Image 1 (tube, helix red, strand yellow):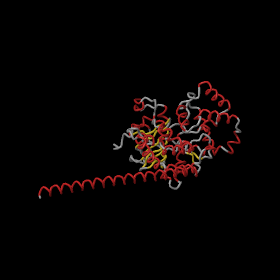
Image 2 (cartoon, helix red, strand yellow; image 1 turned 120 degrees about the vertical axis):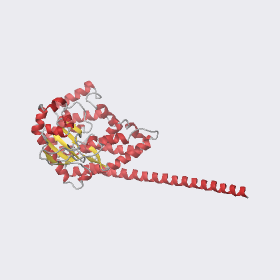
Image 3 (cartoon, rainbow, N blue to C red; image 1 turned 45 degrees about the vertical axis):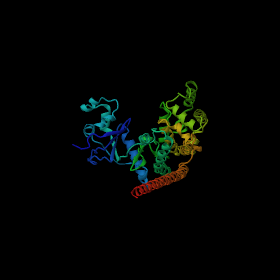
Image 4 (spheres, one colour; image 1 turned 90 degrees about the horizontal axis):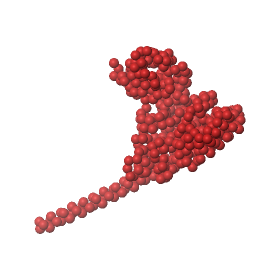
Length: 412
């Protein structure tokens, strides 16, 4: 029996799951399970289409010089073993089938999902990363003492140093016209001391407008405001009738509750001194009179190219909010300076949003500024520590001298 039998499902979607460590392919490649590898199993009627598209984007990223510094990608594609054999390798695979009866799955009787798994499943295999950005943030940036602001600044600056490669990655992706389209705290993982992007399953070339139009419309049809997409992208591809219905919903229900997560969206925009409600209403009204065909032809690519910048700029504000520390930002010059950069990155209007290359340049200047301050602070502390040690040493010498004099006096 495989020594690594009984791994762990580390992520799941409606028709996919990621298993660690990896399982073997049907053709017996990757026969041994490797703790450094994961398997992403995609099943369903469009499994082949989705998986081959993701493999194509991964192969495109692989051709970018230096991609290993900021991305973990899937290297191989194959057919997984049949469901019965797959769960004998790793029982965690049953968690892929949300809502299915576990006993039924293990009985060998084929449910619809098991049938789709056996007929259409495709598997990607790639490197395994470590902790997600979300988990890292919770562990490192937490309130646990009276000197919290100083500790928060120290951990935040350490975190930002690890972000350097991510900024480089976004600059490179932008240069090669690749949009990740799924930048979030669960899709950034630690790997050998740095952070890297994972999961290019929604990614595509910016020239594939149909892909991005479909994604934006799917997101519009949810019940939430997706915090990591600019609203202009979510609302662009809807009809005038749908725009009017959305405006009516805001009027009747109120902006605070017309969609899930609106309260978080409002809080973050309040921190940035922006009126979230006015911005959305303005966007919707602008779209009512927009020349759609002309915009698609001349401007839409610019909107698409700014999505990843927006998503990346929203990461820290969302994590600060979720961990109840957004309120501390204004108490720190360091945090405020970085949040000014995030504000430029998540500007609601793509024409006013900072370009990722310019954002990276600003980021480097902030790192240089606060790294220098940190070095000066450590130098002062070292100097003070040496002075204290010197004073203590002198005090000990004086005491020893007095002691020796006292002893000689008694002897004489």
